[in-house]
Length: 529
Ligand code: G4P
Image 1 (cartoon, rainbow, N blue to C red):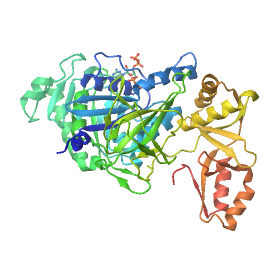
Image 2: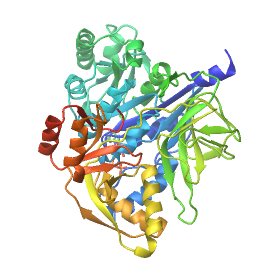
Image 3: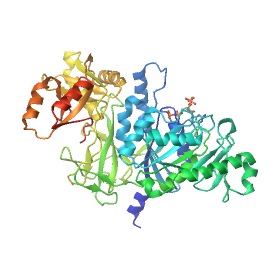
Image 4: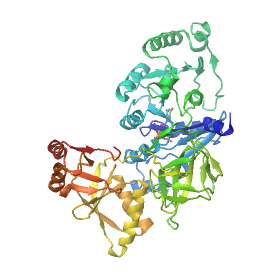
């Protein structure tokens, strides 16, 4: 096999998604420990917004510092190069997570054994399901009392609309937690509650009926396990890798991240079944990772970590070919050639300048304002990657300039923050007033704070009654119906940043009435249609 193909095949780029507090940070940290990427627990900083912090948006600033370091955590394990992409759990930053999900090849979903499927898990899994992203489920905190395994598996199937098959099974739980039976490898791992215990210490059980199992976990627990496994076998489909890769079947593991228990089982299975970099759809064709020519896209921008320098880091996922330092690439949207003298690659907690990167890898490019989210780089081919839609925001406010001397700064700041994907800007057709739309209310504070501290501009907000922003697509832009719509609804029409027409409905009712009155016009809830 050619070296290049080997490099592609050894990469696994994935994200861990969960509702806050389910154990994403803890699991990430344990995975890094296996890779030898970090030496001690506590080394990975949580990216979540801690409750009771001085102020929410100050906390966000602190988090921004951390999240540069945790954006990509890369390590090697058993000759596989693993790239974990960070996904914020806080719901106000859900859009960030959605965008990151366009750059992963698979995900691990963490669920709290006691809380079961929570709100944020539902939303994120839905996005993965829509994109057929392969998912593995990890049910965490088995050292605590929680729901019964079958009940949880049912809940996952129903609430998340998945088809599951357990690849490990818990023996007891909480106070009675004895360990897990690894269905995938056919062995038993006993729980001692000591996270430093030799992690390879498992007992092979090739025959579940052997007395060895009774000796190991006691007769009663052994009988229960036998019954439960038999039941599971009858109820759940057998694991099928094709079905998993196509997003039709989701294997489930049980464990306790905090106790580093059940994590090795998860990781070993992950590296053998999770997909290497996958082909990606562009506006002209599907691009395969093993194509010779480089292509990649920006899925995240980090700006102004040091307010004294206008530094921005654009994160590119490499889809095909090799990305090389100092080589000329085409920035497709700007139709401009660019080369990069110091592309960063990410390792567990540091970044380094690299000469060559491969499909599946993420490189960080220093940027002076050329990139926005969704931009594509190629070796000359005119193609753009799809799949980074804007969602209709939940909150809307007018943004006003509070310092007339600083209007340039305000404009630039707003422009750059929008490129970064912090929020969306809409400009009213009628009078040119600017409206900021966000997914969470926290973003307004973030924008105000960052405009002041990074751009020296001051803004105020004014409330505005908008229920939803919908992207407008007329069947025929010249039709009488569309002209009438534009006349009647002129007050509610705006352009988004890319110039697309948007209808700002002030209520669910008025949206419905409008849809009924103008049947030849489509109203979309995301910008990608
Ligand atoms: P998140 O990134 O998904 O938000 O969750 P995180 O890993 O921060 O874990 C949330 C809380 O759950 C933490 O406790 C963590 O220690 C705990 N936790 C994670 N895995 C397990 C597990 O397997 N068993 C048990 N019992 N607890 C677990 P915390 O008190 O909020 O934080 P900390 O002060 O312990 O860091």
